[in-house]
Structures are given as structure tokens and as C-alpha cells.
Image (cartoon, rainbow, N blue to C red; front, side, top):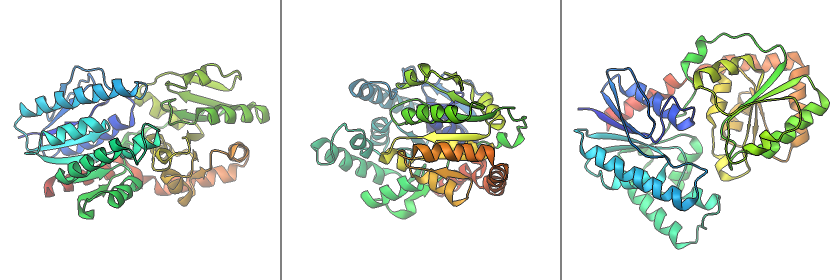
Length: 374
């Protein structure tokens, strides 16, 4: 009997959810065969893993809300149909998409369900201004979510902040909640690349609504005006990509897309990693995948806003976190890390001391205990 793993996206896509799901699947396959239900057309040469691709254009952040809702419903119903065709008693579901997960759990009540929560819905809808917490839609969705959570045998969260919000706002017993950080792949421990000759700062990821691309451009411009020997590598596209495409200074190298295996090598050649998100609850509860990978590559991080990821970086003294308004402080600390080699080397030494805590293999292995005990 196999386990079913539902993940909208999967490797080789360079997306946080795809990487996280891959980490978990690679652990689960050690005790049981896994069937992956995903929209990603992927080939995996592993006898213990089978991929059943779902022919559907996946919902994206760039979609309007109605179109995205329709695609989430379609994905959920297609998954439900697929599950009915398999003899599997355990189903692990990665979210988002939130609406898909609600449908899958509702129509798979005879299964042992483990839910991996990467963003907390329906709260996210209020944070992006779709509707308010006083609205009829929010109240109905929250009541449905509470019922669905109770149907799950266990809930995993991507951050401690998400775990805390579920504990506070939903009727879920603490024993049925576990935070598991995604971490970075152990492959990074085997990569050895020489640093770029020029001091280089990297920032990969979607250039979308959640990211403070405006701040990123201001920081690049401010650094250029004070030190023209610092280069920035930006990787990704999205709704705000025009801000990068129209950037007028020559301290920027931009790539729309890079294979994840190549990105890991680029990290190790750089000197600092940036993660700028907007000052919303989404930004505050997040722990972006790139920050884990900065730790794996031994890069000091510069993060906005004040957040869970920033607190970890600050507590271990492996980088800095700022408010989004602190433009000059951000620029000055970047320049300081370049100019003060003792300070820079101290941050790197601190990373070396703690990086083992964030290897994905150690973190994702916790899912085995949850599966065998449920």
C-alpha cells in the first residue's frame, strides 16, 4: 500500500513549496512507496516514487482571484478523483492552494490525512485586501477551515508563527500540531565554489506583490552611488519584474530563471543574501526558502521586515533584519560588511556554527515520526 503526496508544484521547479515537498517525499519513501499528485511534469528515477501528473495549468499569484479560485477548485476535484483510484490509506497534502485542500480533505474523510500548512488561510485573504475579517465570506471560510483542521490526523506548519496562529484561532489540539522548517538541501554541503572577485549580493525569488522590489531597487541604487564595485544578482520574474528590467544602473545582473542546482552554486560564489518582503503579516510570519539557503551557503543575510526569519538571523548573529523604512541603515550595513572583513568573517563563523541545525534532511525527517504514529 502506497502513501499519496499532493503537491501543486514539484521539482525541478525552483519554488519553495516544490522544494519542501521533495524533502518530505525523500524521507517518506524510506518506509513506504509514494505516489505524487502534482501539476508539474516531472520525471523521477526512483523505484519507490511514482508521479501521477495532473493536466492543469496551476493557479498562480499573477492570476486574478476568480480565475485562481476556479483553478484551485479544478485541481482539488482532479486530485479527489485520482485518490479514489489508489489503495492508499495515508494522504499528505501541501498547501497552498487552500481551496483545493479543503475539497480534498472533505471528500477523502476515510483517509488518514496529514496537512502541511505553508500559508495560513483564510487569513491571507484579509491581509491582501480581498475581504475583511468581519465579512460573511471570511466567517464561513474560517468555520469550514476549523472543521477541516479537525478532520486531519496531524497538521505540519512551515513556521512557528503559523503554528501559533492556528493554536490561537482554531480548535486544534497542540499535540496535533508540529512545526518543521524546510531548511536547505544537504547537497549544499558538498558544493565548493570560489567567490566572485567582485563583492556580490544575491536575491532570488518571485518579483511579486509580497516582495518589496521597490526597496530592492532603492538599495541597489544607493549602494551604487557609494561603491561602484558591488554587484547584485537578481533571479526571478513576476508582477514587479518591470522595476528590475527598467533599472538604469550597471551594478545589476538579472536572470528570469535558473535551475535550482545552478542556483545553489551561484549562492556559494556570492557574499551576502537579501530578502526584502513587504510589511504585512505575510512578511512577518514568513521564513523564505532563500534565507535557509543563504545559511547553507554561509552568506550573511539582510532581511526585511522584522519577522520570524529575521529574528532567527539576528539571534544567531548571522546577519541583520530591518524595517522596510530603514533604507539608509540597510545600505550602510551592506557597505560595512564589505569594508570590515573582521565583521564579515565573524558572521560567517557564526553561520558555520549553526548551519547544521537547518539542513533539510534533519528537519524533514521529523515527518517519519508523524506518519508512523498516526
